[in-house]
Image (cartoon, rainbow, N blue to C red; front, side, top):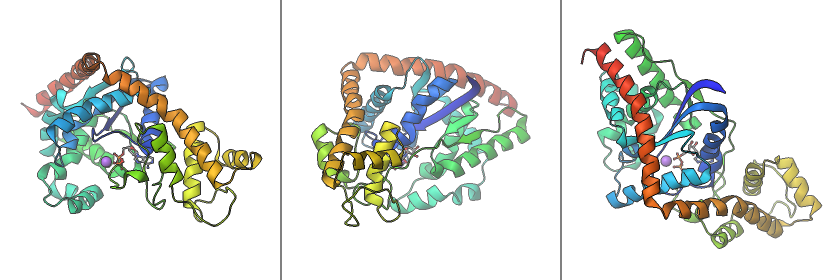
Length: 330
Ligand code: ADP
Ligand code: NA
């Protein structure tokens, strides 16, 4: 067991897809075995940086909690909580905002990218990396397992920790980032891009709540190629087939070579290979979605889990904010 404090967050913006599962969620589940102190936040304050429907958001928070638990997050091991239920996130965000220069945010690639996609980008979208820094620093986190796209934001968190320590006195650790060796899953419709929630074509991704027959349909219609009748692994020349191999490999723990060998041993063609992929995916995700339905059928229990998470996170958050205020003179 390592003495690290681990923090990560996920936005409650709908049911996670297979890419989120093998690229992030499953990693958090595994980390529970290695680390004693893990916080996982359903970051609802981040999600309102773009417009949300209130009723949908409320439901999505519960859906995300249920999904994480169904995937193997154990609320006795991981402090699983709703970000907005711990008010210190917003409080620390304000204090850090007073230490952050405008140009520091202006150049962040996600702002440049996202602000172009929204018609009327808001201040919250601009400053949300500061909130992310607050999320991390509030728990004095040392390990932050996030995707590669978040690395510039982790750098901001380190900079703000340094700026705070310099101006007010040493309080925050220089946080370490962490990217596990995680597979990237690609879109089933356009294997040149990643599988993503923000893809308008739902057939491009497999959601963890897709039924067996929906999974079969989506995989049957997944883009492949006419390069060869055989199943071979070549991400450059055959991105579609290779993505399906990657999916099997991620879900079974077998190497891509082993998957290819298996298809040869069984004499699979593209059609029978797709049936094999369908079975592999369904074996992994159908138990998750039925567990999720089970959890969602007892909302009282689910709320009590989040309440317990809130209480445990608050103990840590209140302690940090007390120290921060004393140093700042508030
Ligand atoms: P999305 O693009 O679906 O909105 P997010 O940006 O919310 O995904 O990412 C949530 C987490 O899931 C991140 O840690 C990210 O690295 C991981 N992730 C997202 N898409 C994929 C993918 N296609 N393959 C592997 N991991 C992914
Ligand atoms: Na996203």
